[in-house]
Length: 241
Ligand code: UDP
Image (cartoon, rainbow, N blue to C red; front, side, top):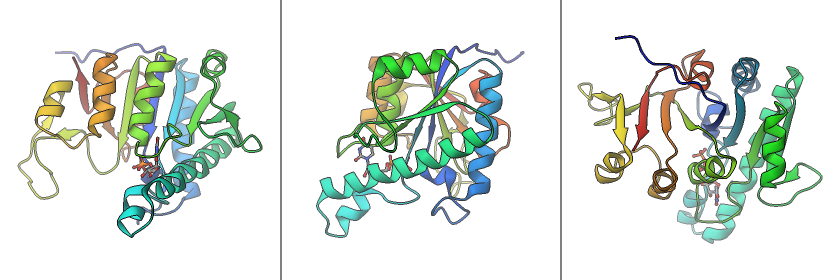
């Protein structure tokens, strides 16, 4: 059977912080960022409006900081700042490639980026600019997966594209330890919640479920996959109602 291609008008691309990192998963590797930027550029040129949420795990994770004895809220604010560093890195690479972009942050830092204003973000997207949302939701105790779900709902994205490293999609067991693990091509939100599949946190998945936002989990390590995902080609695991 021929795989169905979906035609998206507007997509939300969620990149983990690690997507920007070197092979040790830390810091920002400019070569890696350029590869992502080239793919995002190609997706934009195909006529899709692209919004991006970038994580911060390549620099700092709040939970880990708090486990080390830090106040959780303070540690989470550090994590949100890390996402801004990543957002500016991605913006720089995109602009160098001639792609018009805006970074909008959930915590005001006007010298660096625009504050998050929903209507303005939508206007940028309509004009073909890539909008990168930094600083998460602006609140501690949340994740950038939840941010991506929230912003997807706000900007009415057709889909949330979850770019993952080292995995092609969602499996019934961790393929690293269980070579016989099977990848799902299709799941419902309830499957993910009930089976506690390690896709994203429950807050994010619930938000997608309540707002009927389909999620595609795909492998970012494969060159060309970001373009394919943005163009609606079938890949990875599709999660929907
Ligand atoms: N964070 C937060 N509120 C948010 C989004 C993120 O406090 O709305 C903090 C949290 O500490 C998190 C860190 O920012 O650990 C980096 O985000 P995340 O772990 O989601 O990044 P990723 O795993 O995608 O790289």
